[in-house]
Image (cartoon, rainbow, N blue to C red; front, side):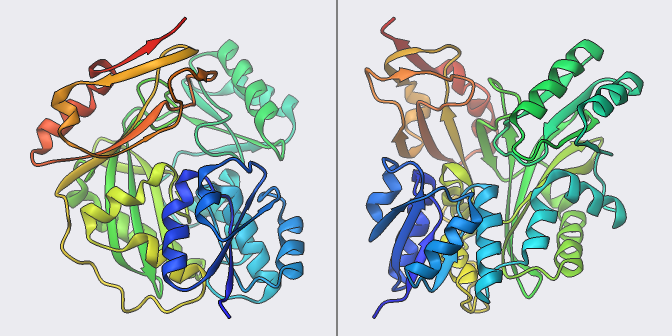
Amino acid sequence: MKKRLLILNGSFCEITLIKEAKKLGYYVITTGNMPDLIGHSYADEYICADYSDKEKILEIVKEKEIDRIVSCANDFGVLTACYVAEKMGWPGHDSYETAVTLHHKDKFKEFTYKNDIPSPRSYSFRDKDLALEHIKNVEYPIIVKANDLTGGKGILKAENLEEAKIAVDNAFFKSRDKNIVIEPYIEGTQHTIVTFLVDRKIVAYSSCNCYSPINPYLIQTEILPADDIDELKDELFGIIEKIATKLNLADGILALQYIKKNGKPYIIETMRRCFGNQFLTVVGMESGFPWEEATVRAETGMDCSGLKCGVPKAKYCGHHGIMATRNGIVKGYSIDPSIEKHIFQKIEMIKPGERLNDYMNERIAYIWYTYEDRDEMIQAAKSFNKLIKIEFMD
């Protein structure tokens, strides 16, 4: 009889994990409170439940005699997976306390200060009055964030006191645990480094530049590899392996988002999960490492020591979410031929005749691409929003 594996959520982001799990011989069950998500159709079974409700998921695991659990492309999924694995005595996941340390912004920032990891100095608040008092005595600009959310939700930059008041209200309103962080806004370029750990040592890595031209708090475009990664790699590797050692991390992904200013990386976020938008597809192409297989193996407690980097399939590659600058009924979109010839995968999210309701966060489609020339790729990425035309019916 096949072992039963629960993968939290079943959006298009988890499809590659579901496929890999089935290749490894698991009977795959997905969950989440949105039954119409496309990923569920790739699983053997779907159970409707909120994957962020860790107690409910634990109850399902026991009732359905599930053998292992894998997180999804969301921080709440990581927290739930670690909680359930800890309660069930399963390998492959960090302790729940460690997961909270890494995925709640206040805890992670506290960890960086204690361990001399370069990061903007944050202050956390559960009391709105204290937060409003704090912003009277800060140097602007600042950035205000909901403590427990991802994908740019609950984040606003403030240039002055009036904007800061709005940002504080926004962060408190959107935060589930009603906790926010306030920190200096660092002017620089944004990047991500993605690593895979085995025995707390890096065995594979990739990196990218991150561009957010429409919603400044939601990454729209990534190009691989990141600028200056060869110069920063040793420092970033040192930070990652320090985190892994200090927290005794399980095998698996550890990613850092950082702002580069004057040649120095300042860590702003960390993640221990697969990425949204099937980003591991291009990470695998650029690095030659089987990220999806490795993730399923790691989170189910299988041995990952034999996994190696093969020959990269692409020297330069990336991902882009097609976004509009207004809401409306989408008629369609067209991609300039100079871009189209580089695309190897495309997924449509909002089809012709459907309404775009939240243009600042929703993508009409996703594209994945490869280039032979890095400069050409960078110039194209910066022009995607001009060269990809979106037409509305209204």
